[in-house]
Length: 174
Image (cartoon, rainbow, N blue to C red; front, side):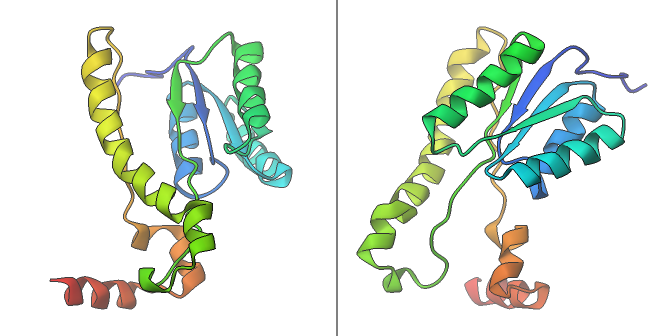
């Protein structure tokens, strides 16, 4: 028998949660009973997501947050704390990938702006997650890391990546 509202009275904060994977995570958490705070860099995205989820009868609020800006991060956390008294679940979904294409074609400017840190951070995130999981296990805190295949992301469509193209790429990598 499934538990009803397993996240009742929990507060979840989800970055980059007005579309795609982040929106799906926010919806699932809210359907499981959590009070969810969504965020996006653009107010109209926040408004649209909050309206959609509240329209389903879910407990959702939101605020603008560019995770690269300290004041936005502070406002996001303050929103959750002021409205709900704290944060029980944090989903860090925001990411930036400043370049798509052949790495040999990357300019130094693009590398400095984020490609290097982006790739390094994705690799480091796996190690960080493993270490935090070990350390926080003693406090009964679970730490997880999900990594979506970039060819399956909604943003892949912007670059003309089709299902057929993904299959061809996978086949060529074997």
